[in-house]
Length: 144
Image (tube, rainbow, N blue to C red; front, side):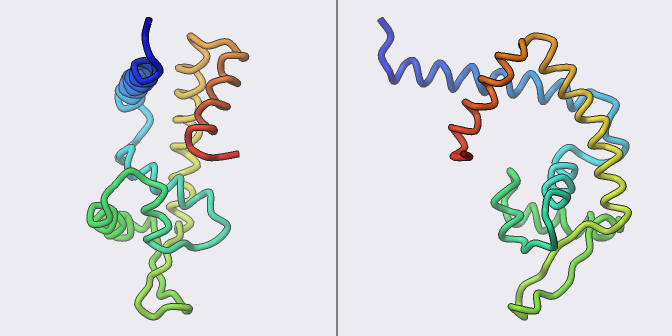
């Protein structure tokens, strides 16, 4: 009989394997139009905000190191997708927000990506399984 630790590690391995399979599928999709998935992740995270956000806050939400994120912000800013403005509350800080072009790019790619995600998730999971998966993932992430 498998112990709780073995069960937890098997579940973790299954989750990572599923993530890897799905990410390879999404990477191979004709969705991205010159924007990497990591860049899209930054655009998507900024699109969910009510206003500009600091780099440190953005870094909490994406799976990149702070130096890699800073370089990406520079590239996205150079392409006119992200605006950087001084933080009035902290002269050393910078606030980040999507430009109109960045918002349009995120929406365009987001529609395509959402379709790919829905297709991949509904191919093998029932509506009840999707609900259970969402609840489990929210619980693991500490999201109520």
